[in-house]
Length: 138
Length: 469
Image (cartoon, rainbow over the protein chains, first blue to last red):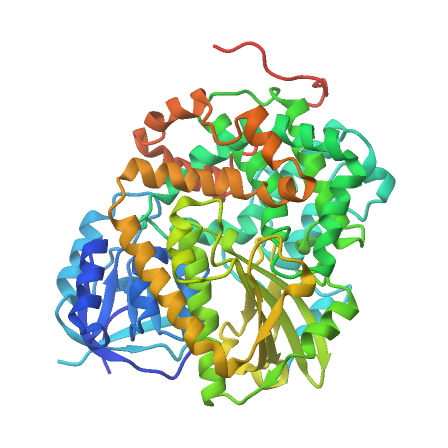
């Protein structure tokens, strides 16, 4: 199986959720997704590793998350584990050398990941203790 | 097969939870790792005995010496790094400007807390402060807990002083007397709570076994047992996660909303974690949505984990009240649980009541609705309001439980303008967004432990700060 992205694995699980990646840029988009009733059709892509931004999505049963910063010790990492919601954190594209830099200007890095993943159907693989992986389905 | 008990043997150095290492003020010496080994190294480098088990008389003494202050400063800097360095990677929230409100709160605390904590100590005496800590041994649903008590010193003194040094607002020799006041208050509360001579969980191989045995027995009498994948397991886990999420949200994405203690051995290869989830804090005006959904002040959960099935290698209940394990996923191995309700912060222990797992659904609905309403409310708030509110969560809440029990909260509000923002901090609001101070300097100086400069060796313990330039 070929993986398009990988990152820290929030927790090890046999769950392999799949869905169309939806990038959520702001709270309004989170609320729109909840109201659409299609939350469970999507793997959520977010920039930060904090938990409040995704609060209603977590509460209403999101199936999987990809973040572009943060680690399993971050609040979102903790909550994804408590909800047993697979979560790949500080994801980077496997075919790229670009990596997230703490406190740096990561705009180009984020844009490249959003461009590569948003709207694509993927499956999360989080069996490994340390690394979570994102596979393209189609 | 679990190996976690080996972590409690004197010669054991624990596991490493991260690859990074700490340098702090020990340039030219070997870097320090996380965990049990890190604690050992940091204590071996101390000049005084303040990081070893100390006596009641030591704690009642009026002041720390300069060596003790510096040892505490260095140890807290490592401890902060140990629990938070990885958090520095989490980036912006997209919802709540946490880095911004945090740094303002750190500095506000360092300026304002000393006189309020001194007033409280004057009102109830040093022994009274220790009694506040001791009260946590017989209560659940109390915010006199690891994270609040740790924050007094680690955040108010450590991060506050570090932030002001980084902003070049103060010098290392400034505010010695005030630093002493903050750290003494922290030591007294934590010592009173633990009563084993230590003050921090990291000194005790990350254990926080503070509750008296009869309290543990009373709580465990309400436990319900279940299997992974059963309806009860799912309901319990879902409730735990949802209540925890609301606790984070009500406290502006910070950990003041939750508090773990333990692990308490139950026998038969099981341990118990007691988790307080503060879902409704009534000093916050935004908590009105929690009132509307009839969400109580606190849900306290007992989580029973089958350590043998899990193959537990290490468990850390760290000083910010959060449990981390290796392997990381303990949820699948929760085989029992109980839920208790404390309606208000001052509800007597005798009126705290259990809720059966089968009856959690209705309460879960209230939690979910409160979460959605709170999120909707925050999403409409201007950035300045979010930062101000977040600053209050840190600055007020971190010492609120201690002032409440001391009976000095009203006096602090009335006579000391507790809820007012210091003009210097109000002015820093504009400085912290320049040159990436909140986004880059703070993570580098505060979470990586670089900015905790020591007090000069010969500094006077009476030194404050009178000259501003």
